[in-house]
Length: 248
Ligand code: BTN
Image (cartoon, rainbow, N blue to C red; front, side, top):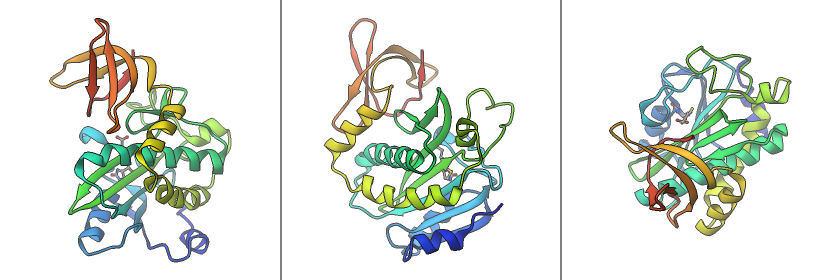
């Protein structure tokens, strides 16, 4: 079923929400709204994306009416170097809203993955466009199955909960959580992310650090800017700025 936008708007009066049946990517819709002067907190969402985008140019599976696919225009005074902190804050917002509205508890994998038993159920994509942050959030809510290429690494909240879930309730809980977590100070974001993620400390990981090069090591915390520290097997510490992190 398409999202019941009237119910969401009734629960969030004053929130500007542009919801469409199908778009290539809500990242583009939100960027256009931002360029046209949309205020902070404006939401561009869709029941389906035909060209949903993940990190590193990967596609984001966006089957019609199954997940939540939306992007928020954020006009806080962010510098490009602060994007990692925004990504961490958005992950915490999504984790909190998922717990509150569904009871499902997710792990966080730096910087942008939400996991259930090491399978991905949600992802965050942040882009800086004309001084606004476009914060994309994709959550697998009611998918009962996935295409074969991601079936082994993806899951949904419905599969975890064992029952269909309300996308409306999740969105109503999540949008205020985005505002709250993004307004929080860095130290709090870093502390709570560290407490909520099994990947921040003491986790054996493999990190793609570019050009097919892999780093094997153990996670050793976050820098003050929100980057991941990985200690290799010789004890040397590496700051991971953008690499994909996988369990070793
Ligand atoms: C990732 O985990 O690689 C990031 C996934 C982000 C997906 C969301 S869905 C809404 C928004 N529109 C997109 O095209 N991507 C983001």
